[in-house]
Image (tube, rainbow, N blue to C red; front, side, top):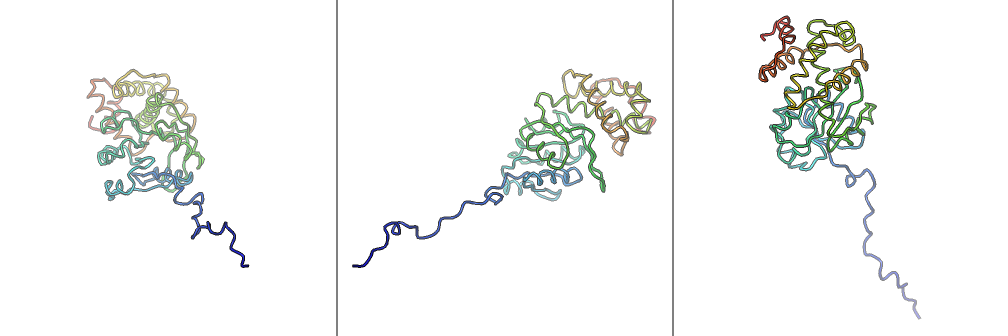
Length: 285
């Protein structure tokens, strides 16, 4: 009598089932980040995101955002790393489907800058490090990050040894104002004094205090609410102590002074110290 095949064989699959995808394969890939702006800061954030395992889709000036949005309709974050002078043009071009995913890192940033573009809750990094061409990244103090993708950016920056911390959304304005106060006070006073930020604070504190007070008057008008001035000054001083040899001015200083005076005139705020420094610098103020 012939032996029949074991019963189990009659139920064997005709072809092998696919193996589960290995971790790290495309099916396990994280949502990408689209990056608008591929300058020095864009390169730092791109490196950080890639190092933390996040795909990055860079967008050049010549790239159609609408074309990219069709390929990447739901990025984890749309990180805008262009300079402050190009910010509003970039946000004007941003597809509507990306606006809820916007991330911003610019200097002199305040809520009015994203409100005017219909962006309600961006991720914002108050960047306290700098990257110059051909030089290593220099950290002043840890970078606060707020918003929906704050945890992702903090993890990414930590992966390349740039200290960062997630802050509550309600603390964001104070963090932005402290950064703005530092940049504007250093740049504007530096047009007269030159030198480093520690020299500015230690040797020209009266002038720095006067200019800082006028800057905070303008910031208060731009925010549309009273500010915690002591907290802003404390934040500025921490940054000065974090990198005391940091230079006070750069090529953007005259433009920042002109912009501050323009805001003050729009608000009807008297800024005699800013105007005096502007005239000394040869500006038409």
